Length: 242
Image 1 (cartoon, rainbow, N blue to C red):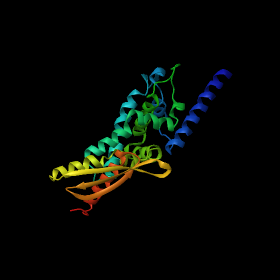
Image 2 (image 1 turned 135 degrees about the horizontal axis):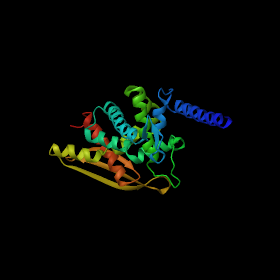
Image 3 (image 1 turned 180 degrees about the vertical axis):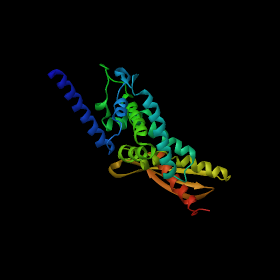
Image 4 (image 1 turned 60 degrees about the horizontal axis):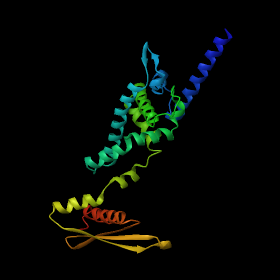
């Protein structure tokens, strides 16, 4: 009898710890705790769930789709003037396995995983658990709340979308494409200078059909040309260059 009581007490203590860990992470108390337990159950530790042997793989599939929808929804509204290609690049960068795995490790989700793997765990195991967690949230509290929780408590505190957008947006390619459509010509004049502490610095000047349109600097030729192209691109967009 004492052994049984001790076993029950240990299980309840673990449930309580898990319950409050979710509250701290998500900002709300789960309604259906069984869903979240399943989300952290790796297939190596498959358990019975409502008389069905289950693990987090089905929730992972659902969560993957929900994350893709949330990120697409957010990017569509955040960048109303950007084309489909740009939005696709940014979304892929955010929802890729490497990115989700890194995000899951920052959230320390591996500590909540139930697994029977004795050797080194696969690299994507934490990212898969994050997808399953989002799937569990979606089933538990619906899309709107999952949207807000994933963005404001999981994604945005750990991922700088604006910085990611600057890196991903290829101003040089877009500028060349824009100029060629207008049957114009474009050239970049890039030179190397000595910056602070004798570190090399590049300055690039871009001309469109013989007219000086933009200038930019950077620690590499590529960066300098991107910044010059950005300068010209923004001037064109604002009507400063005819």
